[in-house]
Image (cartoon, rainbow, N blue to C red; front, side):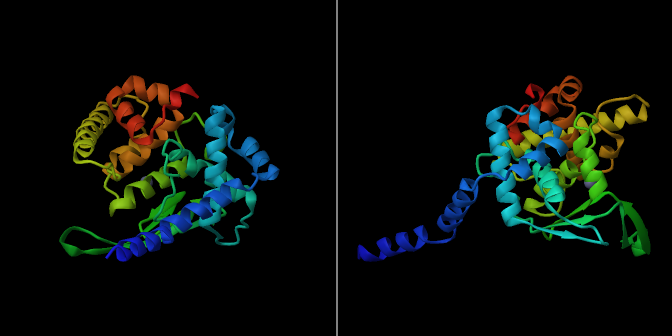
Length: 269
Ligand SMILES: [Zn+2]
């Protein structure tokens, strides 16, 4: 009678979460390669600005990310530590405020192209009319666990950390959004209350962006954010990390909600 619960406990203890924790602990105990640190310093200038405690956490997250996710070069793109560390560091920046290790659990592969890539797709228009669409993209995020990136754009996005544009932050924001289904601008938030606050603030900021664009006024949030709520979340994530003070000035409620979600305040960096 007592044995059964005890056995269940032991089997749980030896199960996935425990083995995963042990594996992760082993990975972060491995010294961070000096060559990777040099890549961070050279390619990811925001790394040098982070408080020491966040620099260390970012290095650990990069180790975990690179141990977990496959990088695949496409169209002749070579993938070595230069690509892997530069992309992983930007992705991991997004989840640096999360205590759980910010794992992007649904992501399996990062596909890297030598430049913008062409995507052919069939779109269903009004009345069910099918249209072939050809688009040239710098990045894309799939809910089946892939992020696709143009390496020169991923590299240049990291090199300019204050311009408000970063394709890696953008596509990995879509990954966060896709953790609870198709991208709709609302990643998993933990509680109904937080969802309600998120929806209210996002809708107001989205409407404000559309009004601003209609009036032809400039602002910190890129016009591409007005495409739909999913793009809005990805675009304001770029602004949150790359132009935090300007975003907080222009949209204080939006900044506060994003800061709460990410567990970070990039204005301090
Ligand atoms: Zn997008």
